Image (cartoon, rainbow, N blue to C red; front, side, top):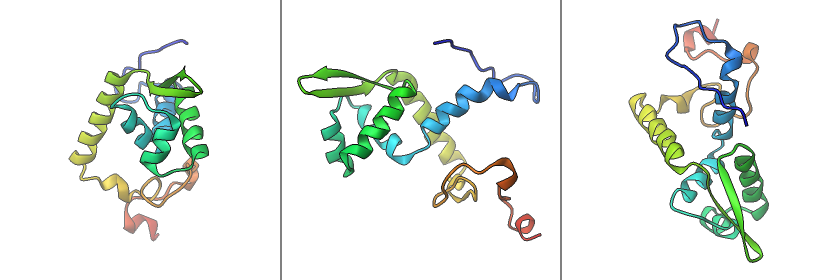
Length: 142
């Protein structure tokens, strides 16, 4: 799989949006609360689907679908153990750094992203650019 380093410190406006597509795909993979919960459970070690369904209170099919997504994103791997599969993080140190950085960013911004009219709590989907809502109440009323 080809890898490309994203230089986010480049001069403002000098980054080709296409080079950011892999990072955007990663954040989409991390954008579901269930997938984040699964990843958090896997930070302490391997789990079977059955273990995760019990811990999360979700259906086996839901957990399996999210694990498939995380595997396709390259974030989890599995190995057979008897009739079950054991799931684990592929790059635990790096993922833990990303999650820790996200927590620090959330705390630094006062978790205001939860109120985002486009991606905040209670919203769904990924709006097209022309459908993005303003974050400022006075602009959205005009």
